[in-house]
Amino acid sequence: MNHEPTGEQFVLTRGDATATITEVAAAVRAFSVGGVDVVQPYAAGSTPPFASGIILMPWPNRVADGRWSLDGATQQLDLTEPAKNNAIHGLLRFTGYRVLERTQESITLGAQVFPQHGYPFHLETSVRYELVDNGLSVTHDVRNLSEAKAPVGIGAHPFLTIGDVPTQELVLTVHASTYFDVDARLLPHGELPVDGTRYDLRAGARVGDLDLDTAFGGVVPQDGAVATLRAPDGREVSLVQDEDHPYVQVFTTPIFPRLDGPGLAIAIEPMTAAPDALNSGLGLHWVDGGDSWNVGWGIRYAGFHEGE
Image (tube, rainbow, N blue to C red; front, side, top):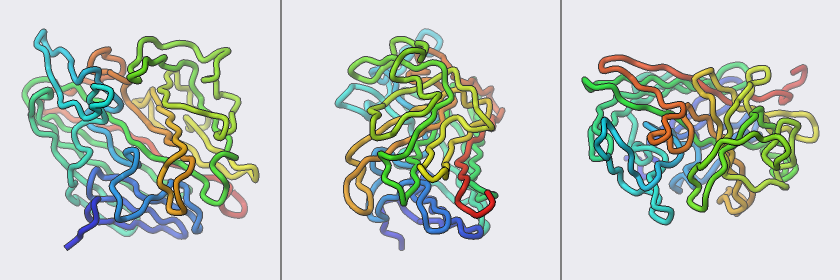
């Protein structure tokens, strides 16, 4: 019997790349290439710190007061971020996924969102992780088992790194032209141009100089990458997103419980919908009863092998 807080640990291998996916929240707990971490790992005996690596379903980010309106009727979600009076990161954060398919290089995990107060819809969802050349490909499928249209947003919460370089020395580039201004509860009250602000990361900025918990819009991928961490020696780790992911969140924390002790870490989070999308509608996708929706993103690395 598995007694880890995140359930069974599924290890994928391809060449010198290794990824560990967890049963709980279908999270990426670790991902390395040639022994160098490209996802910030955390201890197997820990729950995911700062939601590290988890799947965010059926909404990413926050819902103000856990409250939104459906056909004129107020819906009240559980307040899972009580300090800020918000509902955060969806409904599957502590759900165990079941294995649908598994190979040495890939795994597909599935779970259901059952109708409940605040979200009266029944969804069947799966996520497929596959190690590919120079990265990890992630594909989501959502099927609406309800009769009524269901609002859906999808996200994930990976902390990216280049493990043999101090995180503060990495340079972050984000290919986005807008950012969401937020209040003290981290709720958006405007989408503004990044031009002339500290949020303009299109030319790159040293991670050690950043303090962010910020959603970005106006995403224009460069060579498929939405955001990239670059080491001084030229190695890169990038987040790639398909066209159904027009938003990305960047979050830094100086107290991530790394395996070598608390330290700086940076999450770069793909999102199909904006913060508080159940209220604003920004990026929210309505899935008809009986229909499915498929989206994808991934983590890509470059320069880790000779000749790349």
